[in-house]
Image (cartoon, rainbow, N blue to C red):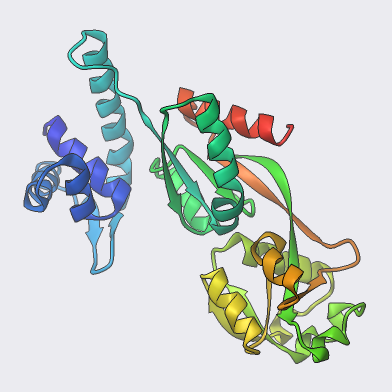
Length: 298
């Protein structure tokens, strides 16, 4: 076992792709594959589960990843201490679900770069369940989710109050329903939901249950990951959907879509910053958390 093998393994685990790992390490793909294969042979364990679309860590791989990342960090510290290379800036890895990634994170990153010019960021977009998985597997230093999942090792910092709304085509049939409670008519319509694992879907189902809506009675026409596809499907008359107002604001303001509140008080949910409470927060992550606190007056 050597550090080059561990470096190749860590990079494949982070990118979930042998070709991308090779590109970032300035190696050939066969070289990266050989490093990982040698590591698996020596340890007598399968570390990566390969399929046609991506690469996933096995249980043994997750265990090794934490140790390997720590060894590579120590190697960098030793080289820096003895002046073997110029001090290397660490990339802050951020996993974010769709809404915070597209509508809140850009603003935060601009402020962060203003305060800490030259700092490097890597953003990985997934759903809320995927964000938590990335944090636990130590493939991300910080995460942003639209819901809180029950993971004891994760700490959540709510920093933004988002509103979920029912969106519908901007036609006369739905305009005539404005002012009515959605509980009076939602069961009559085809409904498009976000995918399982999405914070938006989890929170939408929670809010609907609070309003007394029987989820089993909903006519769920489709589950979709892409919110742009959802909006286009609603505009074309496929059904109604529940989305963040942030995602549909332009269409609502233009009248292409109508927004109905989820209850008299509206469907609010927290957007959260999440990190692993069981390991030290890196200096880069601490500075990013501080930027979020400053920007949102926490």
